Length: 162
Image (cartoon, rainbow, N blue to C red; front, side, top):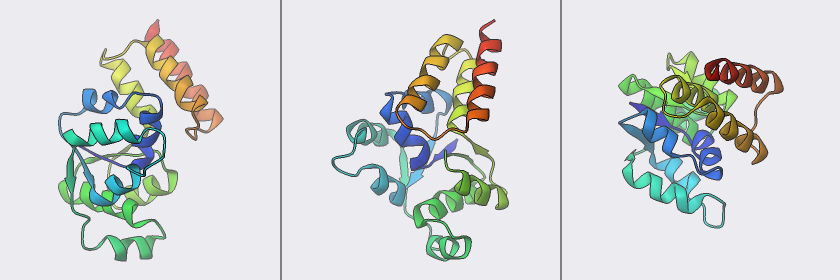
């Protein structure tokens, strides 16, 4: 089971690899606020996200989301996925450092998009070469990734491919 945030869904949609989420997790959830955020008309990836979300359990935004967002200094959509993951003790898939820091302070286990990529490679769902191509594509399409993280993930993918 996983709760997904827009910060993970959008870059995966840009590179046509939303399937990695479905491959790694049988039960995928998000909130209405995240759904609204990713289905912005005129943005690239919106059609793929709309199709992907048909198989996702979209929950109402938790009542406390506004309060938590205000107290933590994060967006309401970010607070909504943290509260959903916290309530059901689920993993949170995101690619936003501030969101992940707050989620971890709430005791929520978090995965980055790169963690998903490594997990799919370890599980044999994608080859190391394919995962490396996805990594390149994510960076080329504008996903924020610190150079040290990029180097570490690239090295690990090379090791998994050996």
